[in-house]
Amino acid sequence: MISGEESGGGFTLVEHVLKPRALAAPLHRHSREDEYSFVLAGRLGAKLGDQILFAGPGDLVCKPRGQWHTFWNAGDDEAKLLEIISPAGFDHYFEEMIAISGSGRPDPALAAPIRERHGLEIDMSSIAALTAEHGIKFG
Image: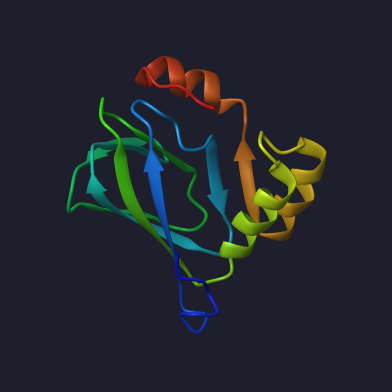
């Protein structure tokens, strides 16, 4: 990972490794950051607003701030992608969530103020429809 401090505040870079047929996150949107996913390996599925798209190695997927989106591994092999988040700062969200998660999922009562502080909205009710529609699993 490249932190915001290392990039001078311009961006954060995170590597995501997704298990086969795994949903990365429920539908969500950022109020402060744009996200760009560069696929290194595997097949990525993404929902951007009302649009569904698929991407493979070498493809770049843009998820602009303010747009509801999510992504998943749409293949039967592990998928790897680099996530560029700009401007920087959202790396602190990941750090805070890891700190409250321990070895499992974070307590929703502790996670809510972290999401709010970082300008992130999540639609947890989207999980059932996404997993059913795309044959994927969450968690």
